[in-house]
Image 1 (tube, helix red, strand yellow):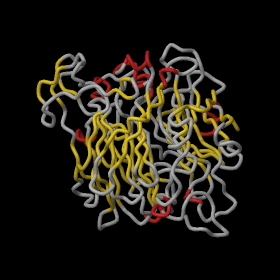
Image 2 (tube, rainbow, N blue to C red):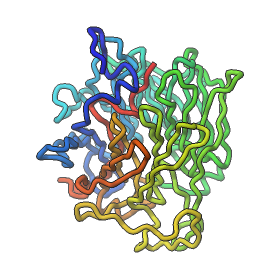
Image 3 (cartoon, helix red, strand yellow):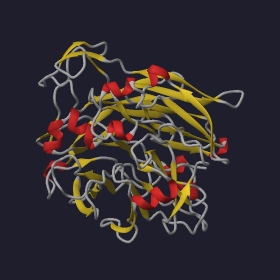
Image 4 (cartoon, rainbow, N blue to C red):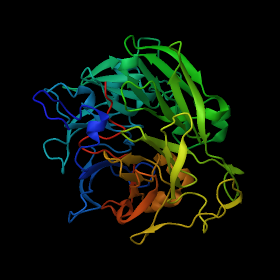
Length: 472
């Protein structure tokens, strides 16, 4: 990190961030909704300092003041987008709630090893000022505000809007999008001010997904397959890119980290595909499919064909590699994206999933594998569920993974994980030729938590990471 008298939070550039210190702590939201345990969700602090006496252990738990929140994708009060502002400090973690529609502001600055609640933004306040609910992704903005995407309105209908919070007072300021401009569906978003653009994605209507996944809801139009392009300055929607049947349920979206870049990638869960989106010569935006994970013909599962179900993607800070998880098939993949139009598979590791060799599912036809993968045991614990949320170290050499997606879908697809809890693993990354290798010494078993098995979701480092920092 460059040293200067006027520096704000984070790093001057993505390449500067890669030179930052190794992560020592990770914050992980842990969920009890749908587990049968009537306890609040909590924020776990995990020690990931290699030589620490508490390495790979939960060292602190911050319970929320309410139950059934379903904590989801966290963000920061300020980040590298405010690097030049010395008045800004990255000391508050923003925790949106997918089901209760609350937002918790957590103080991680006073004592990073023992976070505390700073403020609670209630759902009624968001409903009254914005007409939105079902909070999803939080990003800090260069102007000093915080923006949170939503899945719907307070009645559970689909509505892709954005809530603005003041980053100093954490008061609800109102909607980011201009009146009448909300997208049909909402989920994730990423902005790139140098191209005056933000692009958002679509999951589904809260009414449809809240209790689990029904394939009939896809045919009925309750799930999305579009990318929405927004004018960053006017807060208006200027394009909607229909990804079609090959782009069903586009979830996590990542621009290249280089703030001059006019392209990125999005993972489409149900279609198990990766689309590249890009700015065309005429200034419009377009998308093309660049990766397809083939479905497997199976017996003993809910459907005759099993998709990979891509649920999270990441780009390394130098824009060399892309990583994504196949939650149902059970693997994580690493691609060289030096040629963004032709990503090259350079690493793959199976950790869990629904096609294990000793499970109830028989694979009848697999265009990729000759044999069903064996279960993985780490420190005596069988890895449950499938690899889901992933987070990469700043230097790109360590990949952290948790196995819970969303409690309603966990309960449906991995009922054993509901009973026994999820886990957190760490994978060593070859950043020269590519390659993924499981660290046998790292396992956080959330099945052994004090109040019972919990579902661990997204990971955040106190100093920022490659999915929370945006450079402007």
